[in-house]
Each structure stands twice: as C-alpha cells, then as structure tokens.
View 1 (cartoon, helix red, strand yellow):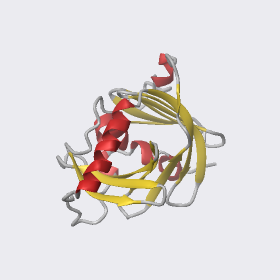
View 2 (cartoon, rainbow, N blue to C red; view 1 turned 60 degrees about the vertical axis):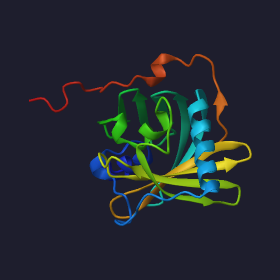
View 3 (cartoon, rainbow, N blue to C red; view 1 turned 120 degrees about the vertical axis):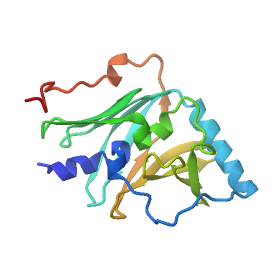
Length: 214
C-alpha cells in the first residue's frame, strides 16, 4: 500500500498547495524573450486558450520513481479530473474554484484553491503566459519546446515547465519541482475532443464531511 507521503507525491504535479512548492533556483529571474521565444510563447497561449473539453491518458513519475497512470478530462475554463489507475486509487478534481485530492485507499482528502496550484495556469479562462507569471526559460527540444514559468505576483511559490510538441502545437506534459529540488513529471498522450462531458466528472466531495471537526 502507498504511504501518505507517496500518495501526495502522486498528485504533486497537479495539485500541491503553495506552501509545498518552491521555485527551484533562488535567483531565477524573468527572461528577456527573443523574437523566436516570444513566438513560442504566443503559440502556447493560443493553443491552451483554444483547448476546450478533452479526454486523454497520462503517465506520472514522482521524485521517488513511483510510476502511475490514469485518465484525464479537461473542461476549460476551470475544470479537470485526473483519475489514477489501480492500485493508486487516487482522484484529483478541479471544480473551477478548488482542487481536491482524494486517496480512497488511505481515506484522505485534501483541498487547495485552484489559483494556488499548477492547474490554475492551465485552466485559466484566457491563458496568458506573458502576464501574471515570470517566464524563466523557453528552450527548444527535439520535437518542440518547453516553457518554464513561476507566479509573477509571488502569491505562490512554485515553478512549472510545460512541454509542447511544435507541429502542430500540442501540450505533451509538464514538470513541477518541490522544495528539495525533486521533480514530479506528467506525460500526456493525445487529447481527444469530447462533447458535453458529464458535469459529475468535476464534482468531488469529502467522503467524511465531519473530518477535522471536534
């Protein structure tokens, strides 16, 4: 059975609260973009803003090397569901305001404001990687490019590296780094458009509503 620490590690790249993230190098600064980098940024903005209701598969490797997979649904703006395959039995849901993490095997339930998680960047109504965040790197890869960004308002400490294919532009995954410099990586497969996803996909309630009460 997964430990409590491993359970949270499975969801680290999706829904860690601001206190659990760090920006990596302390001296990371916003990048002065070249014309090519600016073009990559605008292409990513346009792609993510146009991404509506989709479904696909994902694979995750955490800092301890634990590998998991599952199915994801996105309904932009604001809503997402990451349903992990057994034996993880983990569910991460964004309802548009909060991100909930429910480990049904360990019977734990955690909740974070959407804006304080990496998902807030992906699920915004209009994605603007050139506003509200500090882009610290735009790098070319063998089949596309990677954009690394952090919260420009310093309301949350955290960095996320978004990976894109270039032709055509498509999100292929992301990496989040924790306070010790350890990384959790998500790789996503092809995303398929869906019509009118079930609204219940984006609803998750604490199975123990009296949790934390005396």
